[in-house]
Image (tube, rainbow, N blue to C red):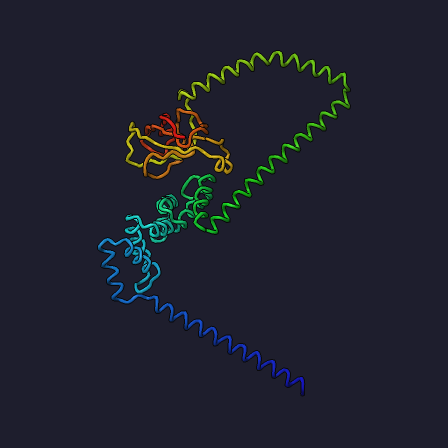
Length: 348
């Protein structure tokens, strides 16, 4: 009988707990519905917002796009949302530019286009929007819509992290950790090579003895006596090449990114700039410190990744920016070597 009473007591406790849980769920649902109902704007406020947006108010256009996107007070309509976001973005609203980038990235009410997404992320990022800085860095990190470039990714991650963006800070830390791992792997490889060479050297000594090593040394001296004059010729050739390269007489055809508008006519020349790789950036990419041709900005057009012919040194660590005069050669941006750039100078 005692056990029976205990069992009934436990059943009653479970029932009470279940009723309490249901009550809490209903209260939470009711509060959520109440909060959502408060967020729904009135007909009058929507009408006023539409009038402001129609009159060209960028903030109103962005807010109206948000209502259509969320379906608050108006039917949910991504096409209308994208149209109003685009109007606000064209006026320079950074938040609208960011969300428009996501519309292109996900194909919401528009054709999926990663290049357009990255372009809108860049427009907002250049205004200092931390979320867009992170998004643009992520595009460079993954190669979505832009050429994969860990240096650019680290640059934009760092700008977002400096504004307190925790995810950007985490991604930047992860990239630095991967770079340190690569450095450790290189050191380990060198140690293994030295160990193998030591074992081989000891094996030779044990096989042929000291006299054999002396004979090998004599042979090596004869070889060096033959090679040395050619080394002198190579050094002289290198000096001549470096002199000509410094004067811009040597052509370098490299893969790079160049910003160019579609209305740039063949034969037309523009003044362009590139920013040399600094030490903190060069660690993220297999390029020398001072690499002068990572990305060439000529105008506000989209980025094109291709081979470009440069007349100027590839590595110029003494400069921060390099001035180029670039001429368009081809009608199509799809062709390599569509541009030829001559160095005009540099700024420290």
